[in-house]
Image 1 (cartoon, rainbow, N blue to C red):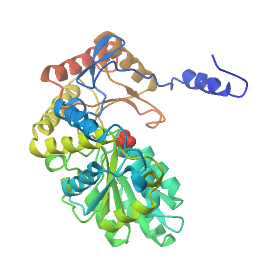
Image 2 (tube, rainbow, N blue to C red; image 1 turned 135 degrees about the horizontal axis):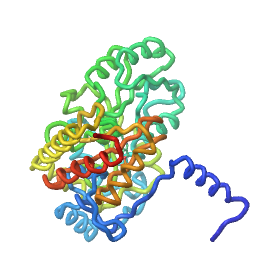
Image 3 (cartoon, rainbow, N blue to C red; image 1 turned 30 degrees about the vertical axis):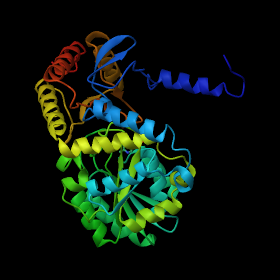
Image 4 (tube, helix red, strand yellow; image 1 turned 120 degrees about the vertical axis):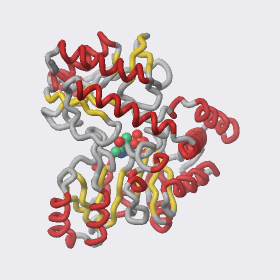
Length: 397
Ligand SMILES: *Cc1c(COP(=O)(O)O)cnc(C)c1O
């Protein structure tokens, strides 16, 4: 083992995490994503991936990537701004803009990079950002990188956003309101129509992160802006290819001036190599499937409805989710870890615990992610297992 007096501190920190019950166990899947996955040689019901529509292992999506590798090779070879832009990137950007009903779009190598890369182009140190309290870590980091003044407003609280805008809007030359569309740990939805109105009233740009809305909300999964009929009223929609779209990458859609400026200034575009051809081609295929066939979307919502019904009937509290994201609220960190372990070991149900610091202390939960590839039997089995293990642990009667 490689260890010396200069790196030993890492082990001490890990022990601290372990003692506090906050050491995240990393499971290794021995095969593709799906309703059932193999971990340590054991088949378990997968209730915690973001593979909403089942596209991560769809035969046509796989084939599109394979074909693109044959035609374009494995790597993009350079950063986008030098020699890394190929016709698959260009096509994907055009198709995404059309799908999202925006002028233009820019593809990134991931959703996290899309946030880190685009927020600092939009605002700088003379500007002010109004950021939702429960925003995703990649937004928080993008806001930090921008050096703009940050004002945090309370979760879903439009009175508070108005108050903060009245008080602080003038402190910035430009202003940006930034929010998750669907909140990933709770499944509730930002009141985007009200946010858009406030943006107009206070002359603040509006940016929504649609990572969990894409493929889930709106006509054929077009996302949150379409869901609320806000085309033209939201300035930027950011998204990821790694959840419902089943692959890898991210993007920002906006007006063509903003996107053209991002190509001059956004650091992941200028300083990190482009998305691989296979990834770009697989997303193009995923989008075609979503546009031509909404049976996956319907099955996803049907499964979510059944799962929620069954769990509520069993006596569980599911918070205020309005989407397929199904948080089973437990509260205690220890009980949450115990329930997750019992589900895994005794019922072969893979459902990860979510504890501090991902969510506030005392609001630990197991977050379930139904998908279009779960069968009716899978959903019933998940509910039954929660009933059995929850009763054993005294969480429900
Ligand atoms: C997952 C997620 C991201 C990051 O997307 P990746 O493509 O996985 O990097 C960004 N924002 C939100 C809200 C997310 O849930």
